[in-house]
Length: 344
Image (cartoon, rainbow, N blue to C red; front, side, top):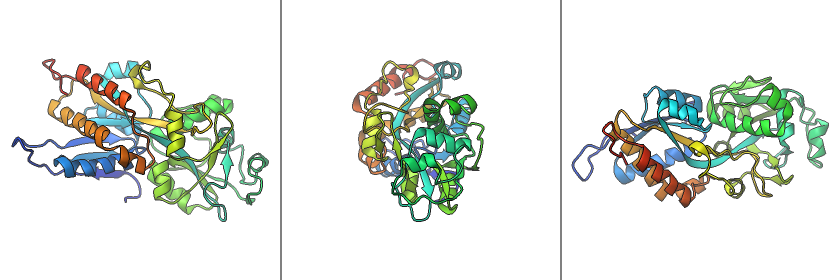
């Protein structure tokens, strides 16, 4: 695995049964879903012979590349606003759901031993809580040997949907954070060091004693990083896992949300993980290369039908069947070639 920007390259062409040349597809964007896209792409190529080259460069980069038409699809964890979708001629749909988690590196403190509230995480990233044995942290971690050690804050340095989910949640639970930092794929960080991609943050946290960071859950598992429990909206301390991500996604109202841009942070429910989010795919409604767009839709159609177990193995939450049907209806009615013929 490369240290920073991952590149998923599965790009040799192959003959399909009709005798035509299969079209390999290109995408770029969010690092949040990279592990599952990599797994799907590998299985899809084995099944169909069609390759997918996905650059894991962050949501900001994915939006930039799809709007400039340099890739077949973009990926972002921050959903685009309806007016921006319309302006750029884009269709947006959710592909997968998962969780962003706080990770730490404290000698002698195992994964899951520390519990943090959203307000405490905000105060750490605002520089208001500077040591691990701060009274605020100690109050909800009785019996844990918290060291008199400076907290080394690690954040993303690139435009990132993972940052959007993190900052969107903190804006909901901390008035100070909302007023001074706010939300977005990039924010002005009050303190800390930046790492590029989930990979960069994982790398920094893994080697800096006393560090705290935030990454997509699969990266925490892959890098064997300690994960903090979080106190959710119902004031219950929960661990990140498949069940807590599903609990947060259970009440999502995709049908009535423009652009299907549902935000799953700070959801109610005793089991809900507070920093849950969806990752979205962006594709042109009138693509310059209809055959490539068709292959993109075929890839995600295959993934929706065959990829649920692979997603669950990496602790992502697959899209529910009714939502998949809504997505496919959108494909059929809105993605067309220049003559007006449906691509899918």
